[in-house]
Length: 294
Image (cartoon, rainbow, N blue to C red):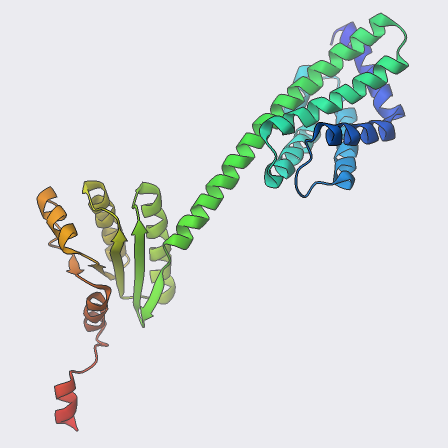
């Protein structure tokens, strides 16, 4: 570590320790003035963040083996503090720019303290250089953490929506159905397959009905996804019935040359359920037979 950085660390550490309460208060006020507050984050939470950030900075600056520019990414406590800050703002709906500006606003507050308490221009320069290296890197890290967090949240929500849009319904004892609506792509097929196979195992189902009445269009890709799902269902020891084959859909499949001859298909969900009941042996006796029996 250079002599300049070492001297700068000492002055920044002194400023953080001697003015912790003032730094927290000024940081809260500056964020309010800049309009970077988001839903669910009030002044009390901001003061808590300020205390955590000061504590993490002090801990990081006390680590001589890490250069200032790497503290934000390699010092565990400081990195986790910045990650938590970004996570709260991502959940509150703040923009990544506002999240990064919040960290940079902290730098402005500390710089003001240093400027007021340091008379020597050289000493102020050394402290400012050190602080810039640490908190500029922290601002970039906060931005990156925010983006990563938002992507994770969006991915999780998208998966939850797909699961809600493809429910596995128990129609009868040992008979399950999956009504598909909209577009069937690779991601959604994976969700359908996982949900259906798990339901087959849990319910010890014998027949799975895949209803495509609500699928907008059937092309080679959709047919391939259906074949994969049917194959997986059969590997679980269950039979599969595809329902909702409308005339236009049947014509499209025939024109594409897709072979569904090995798969049991029915025009409607009711027809598919009747076929499933015959497979399970639960089909009701015909009315004529019931009359003769009586």
